[in-house]
Image 1: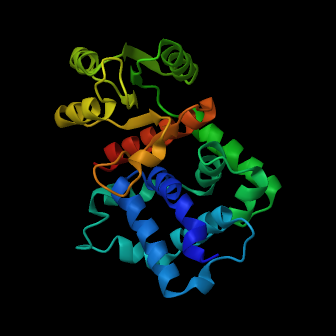
Image 2: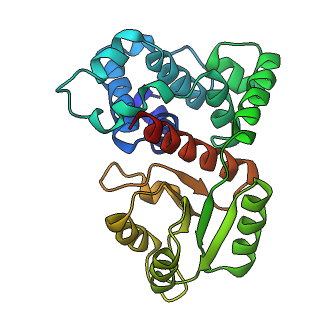
Length: 264
């Protein structure tokens, strides 16, 4: 089977990983585009791999760690990565890569080790380090936009276990806007389809017109939001979700937000 056919089904999820890794939709997409362009020019750089998804992520992180690519991506005037430049010092180190690969992308310890080029036993050490980083995150306030009561309760309990405070739970577009006006949240967790038929994406876009706040979207169909068209969310959790997946993306979103504030 041609390489393009083998990797095509995994490209949307690679974009999700790249965006979570960089903290930016545009930056993440730029790296994915750079990888695809490199593969078009020379397919021999793709790892010899029985599992094409593992090979794809392995090739991506090999490119990610390339000094030349990073320099070209962030050249002044390059345009694409300009909004992410203030976060360059906060780019995820190896522990966060291991955490995202296992917690968000669902790779096994062995697969993550193969992707990262480290022994599987070392992956556990990296994940432990990332967990310590997460535990040290500054607590913040969370707005939950979710129309399913049981899911909302699960999310509320989970974020409170992480040390955060829930400012409110909105079931509709109107409720979400009202809660944001009442108290500005430090992060928003949003479903896509809301109780009154309104869109969580539209609610978030309206919120972002009046304030800057990191957002993690929660949806049963992430591929529908990873089409390559803009605007697209940078942080996506797939339903049904694992608590560690949501924790990972909350951590990553806050990590870049705090890094940006310090740089500013």
